Image (cartoon, rainbow, N blue to C red; front, side, top):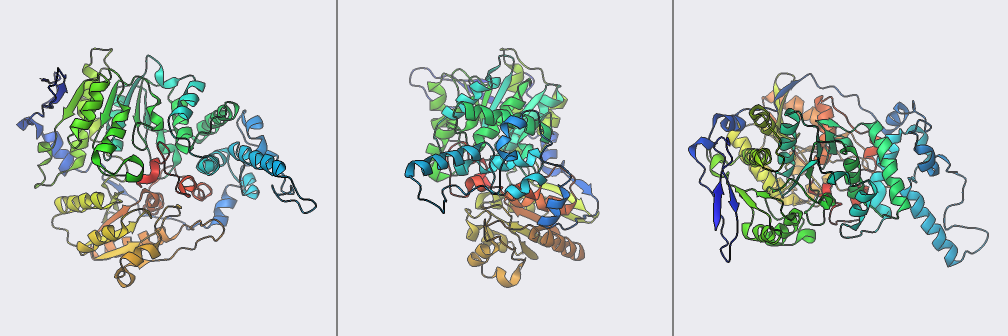
Length: 592
């Protein structure tokens, strides 16, 4: 038996509540009334809220030595009060010390070498670095984030939630405070957009709102925000050593994502509302430490990370449904296997709500704009929370509408450079995402036949399929780029699967360091500048798409003035995934 309910004042948005009696298991998907095609949603499809005009792009090329010298102004002694004890291994390292495990004067016993190996791992966890000479030129923030990116290199993967539960308790269980409302969001696509929209609406309603998302674009700090303000370098330098110390004292082998989540939990301790986006899956994700969320949201289910989550839609849905808590309502989007998620909700005695927004999206010439779907899910979630009988949060209508109009960066983000060149940034990085991007380009720019692309992908994606989709659009030009991230697809990899690009595309093969595989930056900026010049000369639309790993340098080349991590941090970005350590809760960036 299903009971349809609509929240008062929902402006035409309906969702279904399912209560299961005996063996009656069915779901009521409401037919969207004509009011769904309201002007505000037509506006989301046709307007460009992210459009802005940037000044003429300027970027001074920097090499590695320039970056080093630019940060020489701070010495390693500029630390937070905790660093004198916690960072002592960093400050007291002796470059003349004999390398571990090597002794030219006598043979060492296996016990000695085992002790040395254990000491090495412990030192690494406390912040040991493999490039001691650079330490005096790094800020505390740079040291700590470099440590964080290297964490998984020293810790074997420990499946399950034991680490994060122990660490959360050690922090005082900040996410379980009775006066804090937590909205937990999982899904294959759309979860980051829905999280941002929900958080923005609460912020505009004067609630102190925390937001945890991944991956980041230009700075690690983007992952952790309060009221749209990212965590500061000083706050990272203050809180992260405390977390490291707890891990040491209580022998918690926390991984990159667990440490990052713990940092967010500590930062959100005084928030009224917290919106958490899962990193990967749900059941074993580090964000799943929350005991009693106000609402769980599952946006969509598709095939992703099949080696980890399972090779069927049903298995993946079961993993993502693992965020559902007992007696906590769950809201799902239209593109999920309802029977799987509903069965989990039934076991947890949780009310099951569904949004059916597909008909609302058919207002762009038959093209389905998923931002509208994400907006409908976010709006429904907001109205559910604001109308709940359990200490409801008041939300203004203006705040809801403004909040759901927001798009995350690099999700069909439109900008104008030099008052002439229209540029679109999108992290479409796999065949389904590219198919959607190309369809939206045709829908939004039907008369634009000359489109130039800048492309850069991750190595684990279907490069042949991705490049073929772009080539089928008969672009006016293609520029290939390679990020410095260890998981970035090399330009040679792309050329191997699409040999025609050897003569058609523009590209520079970047220099790779032999010792650590690090790829020097520069090729991205060069190609973006060349693409801008050609797009301006030929009156073309410029589209930059692919991995999130390329976007920081792209945005810098386009003139975006925003927080950006230094090359000292970029040099180790992705080390936590370098050896194929894909596992629950600690591979949030693997979707890039």
